[in-house]
Structure formats: C-alpha cells, structure tokens
Image (cartoon, rainbow, N blue to C red):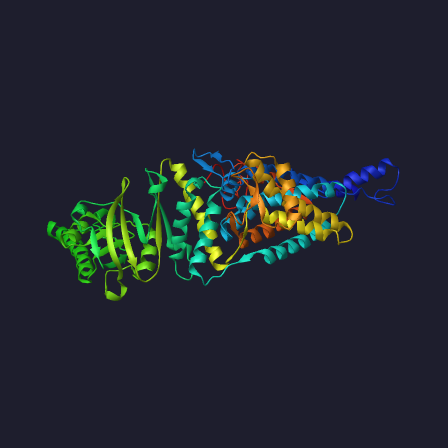
Length: 585
C-alpha cells in the first residue's frame, strides 16, 4: 500500500504527495521528480572551463614573479625564513622553489620542472621556470579569445622541435681529444655557471677547483666521489681541494692523543662493529648465585672484546675506521700498539673511503686478512680552521676528491656549497656532451629570430602561436638586462638588429651595460642545459594548458590532514582508517 511505501522510501512519499496535490493518481501518468545526483563529497570545490585555465596561468605568473629577479650575474638573492626558524639566503631557482612550499596544484608543476632541471643538469633552474611562465603568459590572450588549448599545445610542441633543431645546428662542438682545449672549455663554462651566484667574486678560483675535482674522477663520473665539507671561519680563498678523502675528526675517547697521526702506505680496515664495553643491564639479564659466577660473566665480556681487538691488530691494519662506536678501552689498546682508530664515521664518508682504497666494510672481526684491507699513499690528521680533519691521499683503487669550504657566515658557506654543486653538475654534463653555446641571452635571441622567420611560412593559427613562442624566448635577455639595471627595451632592440644581420652570438653585456659577442667574451653554457630547459618548460606549459578542471577536496586543506589520513575530526566514528578514536597518534 502507498502508506507502507511512504514509510519505507521517503522519495516515494514526496512523489506521492506531489501527485495527490495535482489531483492525479499516485505514481500514475505524471513524470517522477528526478533525485539529485551527488558524485563528490559535500564541500568539494570544482572549477572548470576557461576561467579555471586562466586561474592556473595567473597562479604560475605569481610564482614566476618571485624568482624573476634572481636571473643573471646581477640577480638579487632571496632570504627565506621558515617555520622552524631556519634562514636560507639563495638565488638558486631549485632551492627557492623547494623552500617556498607551494601548495597550488598547477603551480607545483613549475616546482617539478625546476627539480628535474637541477637533477638532470644542475644549472638553469631559474631559466626553466621563467620560460614556462612566459610561454603561458604569451598564450593567455589566445585562450581568452576562444582558441582551443589543444591547438596551442600542438603549436608549442612544433615550435619546441624547431627550436631544439636550431640549437643543435648552431651549437659549437669541441674536440674532446685535445686535453688542454677541453679543460679551457670546462673552466669557462664553470665560470659562467658561477657568475650568477653569491661566489661570483671568486669564480676563477672556484672554476679551477671544480674542473680539478671533476677531471680527477674515473670514467663513470660518479658524483658521490666528490665530497664537500664546510668549516666556518676564514675566507673563501682559504677553501681547498683535497685529492683523496677528508672528513672531520670523530668523537674520541681518552688515549686518542697518544695515537700515531701520520702514516705512509697504511693498511686500512673498515668495520661496522661496536668495539665498546656495555653495561650488563644493557646486554642481557643474567641470574647468578654467588660473586664468583658474576665475575665469570664480566670476565667473559672482557675476553670477547680483547679477542676482537687482538684479531684486528693481527690482521696488519694500521688504521681502523668503524661506523659504530669505538670505546675508551679499544682506543687505548690501539694507541699502545701504534694504530689509529676512529668510530662513528659518517656512512657516506665510510663508503667513499671503501671505494677509494679498495677496502671492504666488515660486520665481524673474524677472518680479517689482507684482501679486505684498503691502502692509500699517505694518511695524516691536520688542523683546518677550528676543526681537525683526517686526510687519505693517493688512493689507488678509485679517484676521489674532497672540497673543504671556508667562509664567514653559515648561510654563506651553504650557498657556496649549492653554487659549487651546480657548477660540478654542469661540468660533468659537459664532459659527456662536449658542445657549448653562448650565454647572456644570445641563444634565445637567435632561436627567437629563426622561429619568427619560420612562422611566416606556416598557414593558419599556428603562425601566430609559433610567433608567440618566439616572443616568449626573449624573456631571458630582457630579464638579465633588467636585473643589471639596463633599459630592457633598448637592449632588446639592439639585439634584434644584430641577430637580423647575422650576429648569432650577440647577447647582453652586464659588465659594460650594453651588448657584445658573448661567445668571444667566453660566456659559455652547456648546450645540454639549454636543450633540457626548453623541452621541460614547453612540456610544463602544455601540461597546464591541457588541464580544464580542478577538483579540490576540502579535507586535504586541513592542517596535518596528509599526516593523519584516517582521522575524522574529534569523533569516535567507526571505520576511520588506521587511527580511530580521539586525539593524535
């Protein structure tokens, strides 16, 4: 009966009442009211269509404006103070994008391309963000006028292919057989990479150091074989390159000062063993009936550690390094027998010593022999500033080097480390792909002129969009000129004129405040860096253009929501994931 159905199903009740009011038979002949379809959770925000695309482009513009002024040799630095109280001073694009903690979904794409550029090449992290933002800025009027985003995406991809082909055609490939020419090329490229950093005043000094470090590596060019250590105090010029492994003196016990601090052709044992007496309550629970039984337990532990120490000495090792603690008993034991030991050595340093000396890290003191011991030409402990360092030089098995950075403020040393990392990555890439291009915006102006000329032979909307891509490339020289205090319009007009008359390597001269042949001025950049930046920026712009709807869950915006996925507020609801009930973990 209708009354029963109404009690069972409210929708039937509302439809039944509606039909009765109209005077018709219940559920008969009249169309049913359509129930509301709810696909998403209550409060979920959805935005779609052209306004959403414009909103995403505007968000990317806001991010680009943050890093815009850091580009070039005269770029400004940014000071970021995070919620932990840490202060970071940097003009490195990847560092800034990481520290800004961007939460906008589309804006995170720019963070990703900056990170990928840093991991792949090491340099050009600011350029790639600027290019992506400018590509979006140039296509924004077309979107507002109703051009379909996929048309823009197709045109941008075609323009990118044309740009990369032109880049490969004009890149200068250098002879890798001539060692001196290769070194000159690497030094000039490293100096260009460092010229926009905080250490630009000492770029010649550090460029030579970077090249020495990279050229000292083996064929694989493993980045982890170059260590960097920071020692506060002194000036930047007191930084040094150690051909070998160097690390700070570890925590030491009594007897350390009696050890031998210098060896020639030592044998090195690497352990992952704790050589320290433990209190009985930490080791195990032992039940004894008399004092003699207790003493036998203590004696057994002493016998075990003395047995380990005797086996290490019998192996013929002169230097003992362990990732775990080496206690006061072992320290004094080794000192009496003319050995050097260090415990709690950082894992990355221990791995570098193992690769460089040929030693194998042992987890037991049994069967220690000459095959698992490493060797080097010399070992010495020296004072560097206010710290003592252990130096392993002349490692025969694998080439390695360590850069010890000096400087005043801690933030300054950290920025110097980031700058050298970029230069080392750039130099490694250049060794693999020995082709260079001129910097200072020269390559962007040449590609822009080429695309403008090419676009005139293309029919339809593609012509306008490829011309927009070409105009967007001019953001690099324009911003470099603006950051140096020059008139960007005047500089760009001069550059357009030079490139139209065949001056393909003319770029911005920030020293004389004008334009010059940057290739002749040795402002060289790796071609692979610019190639990666163009490809990544185009892909990011196409990705953002292809998004026409954003669905945002309000729960994801609550503080700590990602850390507590199962929490449902303060209630005791059932099935709340892994963490039910009140409070936090």
